Image (cartoon, rainbow, N blue to C red; front, side, top):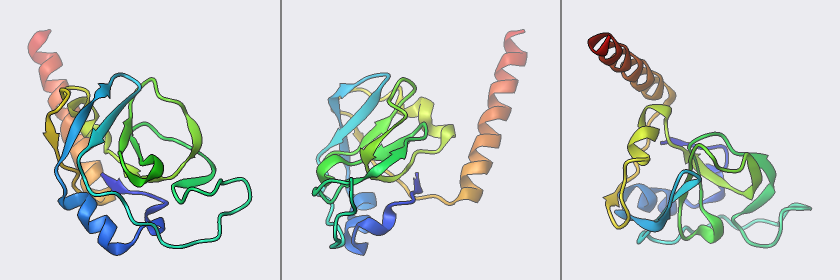
Length: 143
């Protein structure tokens, strides 16, 4: 997962715990999103809520949600937005699951444990390139 634009909204300790915690896939997991439970609730940096954002610290002024966005409504249960998810809204995004791993997210079963790992853009692009190469090899083998 690439930490996102709103990473600054949580405390340093909350960010560390997010990656150290083991989460479990909730039963509410489908093509729209995968909800995770069991980790430590996020602690937010204090702020004055901007106009239009709402009073909950996980609220933001509406933003676009890229494919793979990880939003955490109320700071309690991360949701990885999948292929048929909404394209925008008012929850902050802690980060984005890299495209090379989104098919893995789609294979997770309810109650299965999972962990998030922080990566940088270089790693994300290398993983995407490796994934594309693997798919080309598979397509060639099936041809």
